[in-house]
Length: 165
Length: 165
DNA sequence: GGGACATACTTTATGTTTCAACGGATAGGC
DNA sequence: GCCTATCCGTTGAAACATAAAGTATGTCCC
Image (spheres, rainbow over the protein chains, first blue to last red):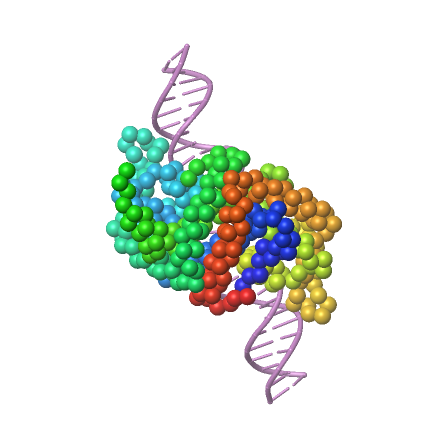
């Protein structure tokens, strides 16, 4: 599926709209990959992309993370983290507990089951990406990595609200 | 400072996880821009990004589009188009009517109000993107446009599901 | 202590996303 | 005419997105 939004704009070739065109291309590509990853995560692991993202954050932090920190890292809004962690807790992948020092704070941590499952998911996930980008020259991939970093940085510098990564 | 080249080389060229890293960077960048665009669309036009996408498709088609075609172009699933168009119809931006020839088909078309509003949104949208990417060299933008195209093409060639375009 | 304020998380309301399943409409085979 | 397969759109449930309001809890300052 997909003829894209970008096609619409691309007929006016003047360089003025390059940034817009790049955004539309990034958006459609990101959507395309997301949908594919979502499908496979669902089919093979009965998990969602945000869940996978959240697990990968916890995987690197043996001691767990506060929900607010999770929110920042996954770029998922605060209100949404609550439900996300709740479901993962029900599935037995995550534990949630309050801090003694500060009763406002909740820390989420991977269970052993969560750790094991995530390892399998991560391996599959990495392979999917290699497959999907198989036709792209590794040199190009490396270049994209760098230049997309520049774009991200520029965007962060020009946010209307506040920011960071 | 004795930096060994090897580290640098293996870092940029040990392509094993480069695809994964690129995907994560594309995803976070895309999320970042999406969130910003959403904020501004909401604040200044009380619209959402999918709505904007949909309007932009209709803008170029005086005669309107069938919902199925809209679904393909916006990369939004069928079930979602229904609600999207419904809300846009309530707001008076879009008209919906059934075909005489084929009573299964519904065609959506912009109203004058929708056309006017979209024009303003599109202009603002384009400016926002220029602002956000202001720190990126135009040469880099052009390169990204090309190379992201290659990525997109590669992904489309390796979808597990089925369809392509 | 008590009031003002900030922080951390939850809740609520609205919209978008996916998938699966349903019904109406059309087209083809008989 | 009639059966069946297919196409088109809608509907429903569960998950996730946002913003905004609510609830504790912690902190500061008088």
